[in-house]
Length: 362
Image (cartoon, rainbow, N blue to C red; front, top):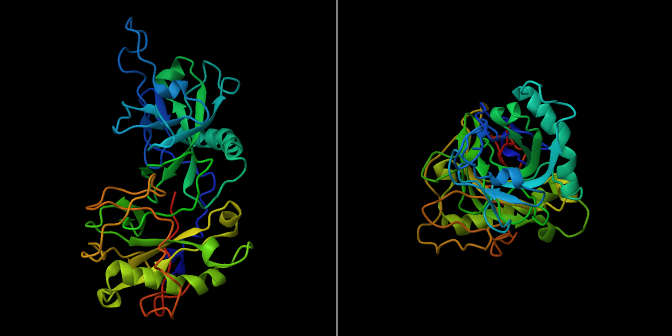
């Protein structure tokens, strides 16, 4: 089994810019799978005598957070960044000098370059340089749509988003300026299957690649301020994750079900940005080297007490049959004893032990 499928720490998200579909009007959110149109207003087309309601995206400034619930983004609104949101504005850029009024609407590839050139610096400045290139935040832009472009609108909004492994936008809580950027999920979250790779969070009843069982703070688990190499991380995580798995699954024979306890590693760049938390999780042992294998149903002990929910959630999730929580890590999951037969280190082959989840793909 290729170890890449079991190592999320090796995924460089960087200032990854995600592109999507076709433009309609208003703002376009460059997401991972398709362009999403931002409606101009709640009523009144361009040129109409009816005065349109100004879309909040047009008035957004750095530090503003935007949220919406409808797929067409017709209900986008500014919200307090402490509440659930999908986009945090880091700055705005005027493209008029490069793209005058008669300029053609940029192609998808051109938008990608514009976004990379224009949004990287303001977003890094917004975070005062503390950005985890392997973390949960992705730099993304809000672009003027074709209708606004034709009318001479040339303002680009830059911002930060939390994007799932397969490209879905995930909710964020709290300003990115103060958040731990570790790319972790709440215990109880299941990650779907996208081809042969990790997908976005799904209900655990659906086929999924991993079920998150806990979060470990490596900064607390490993003494010293210096970055611990993966080998050092792997000295701590097997026993810790095994203890979490035993508590989470209630002693179920995971190996007998074709499942294995796995974990993530952190890279030096993440550590320098303050990202020191990793997930412990359970996944299906891959049948071959072609990719990940999905399994259905939660492994959580049905008699266990409900997972507690912190406020606000520290990580992203989707609706489950029961509430998912977001503790920093399980205090009961102490690192003691040898790794069980179901626990596997990152980098080992399937003939011995696979480990952490694959990198997210963009």
